Length: 309
Image 1 (cartoon, rainbow, N blue to C red):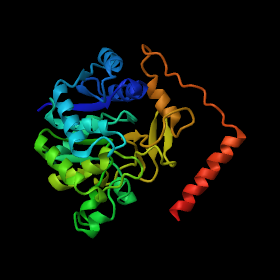
Image 2: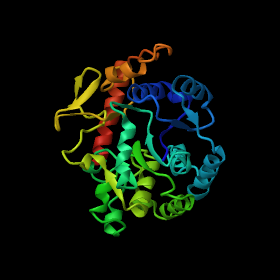
Image 3: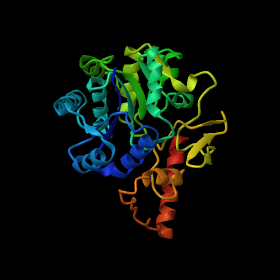
Image 4: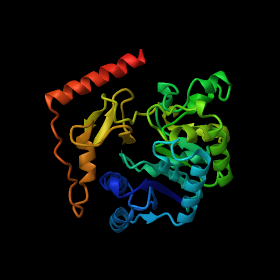
């Protein structure tokens, strides 16, 4: 039984990937990691991650191209904000019998691959509180009105940035059939916040994998993990969730630009700079907006709020 971790990346997210890999390797020197190229601009990051962390590049690049072409054939070029996010679905067909997929805007605080032990009982795992916010960023109320899913089933929606599964539980044909079903019913999905793969992948998992488990439902509960949660407490270079009195398993800056001044910046900066062989990240000094531009931005925000009323 071969276990491993997949990430998806290109040269643009090199600093994020370094922070993630530093955190993984701090707790786990040996678990194999495979990178799925986000696009053709990945050779610099591939060199860095291979040299310092033993990361391998996904071998079957022809499959990734085939997946991308099929996606375009079914949905067209304007359906998704970031269609390349779907390349992470190559995880189902890679070298690992059991795998975790982890977004690069994450750092971990434990030997994260051990969460795959839940696959002794289940076929799919996730670990987040996405469901507690309702169906926003995943589905529209149509899925309940038309009985596509039950209220109980939609409690299993998850954030697509961290999940694990068994190889081949989803087949290539499953993917293409899901694309076709979803393309026929765009009214089921909430793309208002420019999410890309998350609504479609949630639909696929709810339809095709009944043995699934969200780790935050374990006995004794589990900590949160979203970088937008303001209540986490710093303890050394780990965060504690006082709501459950537990250290976080990982922190995910989903929807948050990682830069000086962002939530938990010091945590990210620490992990990004753990490897002394790699120069520290350099961030441009933010350009201070003029009073006129600030006024314009405030007016735009007010207009957005009015439209929501």
